[in-house]
Image (cartoon, rainbow, N blue to C red; front, top):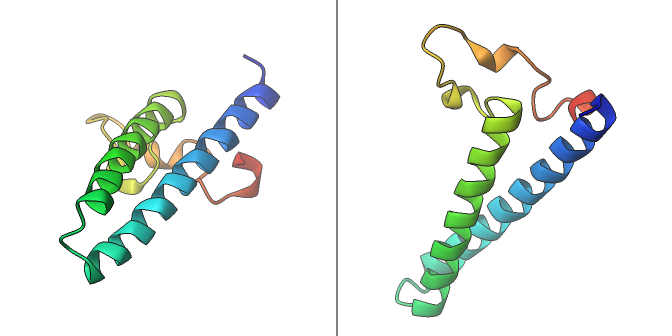
Length: 90
């Protein structure tokens, strides 16, 4: 895969993760006010699962998404590539 495609895929995946995290944050605020809402809880659970899968896919393809995601016992991978907020990485 060439570098431009790789960056485009990386950027698209980060965008999906950001959208899911936004949805989770918003529904969490709703659940703070309406903790008995079964519909909101179902929405939260569905989107939590999606966010988890997207983050796992990102980390498999591009490395750690956060510093807490370094799963290599031999190497500190967090510093290997562009960080998620760096322009050249998106």
